[in-house]
Image 1 (cartoon, rainbow, N blue to C red):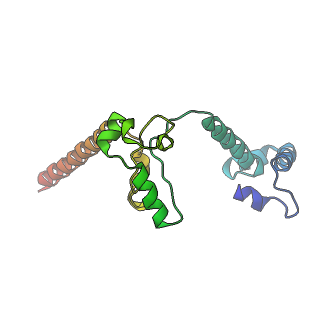
Image 2 (image 1 turned 90 degrees about the vertical axis):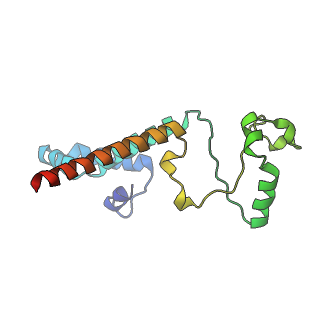
Image 3 (image 1 turned 30 degrees about the horizontal axis):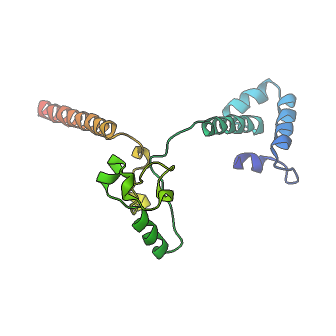
Length: 165
């Protein structure tokens, strides 16, 4: 969107309707060579088309219902964080068995029915965000594949150097 903003005249509004009108005018004026050039260096019509496609994808993904596995909450003060952790920490055995008799206030249940495993989060830089909602088995399988490929490459290099001697 930033590239489109730079390409528009300074007095133009940045509303979606205005940009689409401007893109249509440019598209209408194009000749064969302009169209070919636009395939190499995208102009306002191409960039606006990408914005429309991505906006549609985001709206489509927003319609999906996905269960929450991990929730990260930030607090203004350390005392508030400690108070919340005190009220929502129950221990892994109680959480896995969903032992709701352990809780004193039913408002502390997640979605009104489940115990939450509240704990202080790791530093954001130490969290592998791509593996966050993956099953342990999938993570282990990916690590196994990487290890096998790495050992294979090392073995090939060792054989190649032994062969070259």
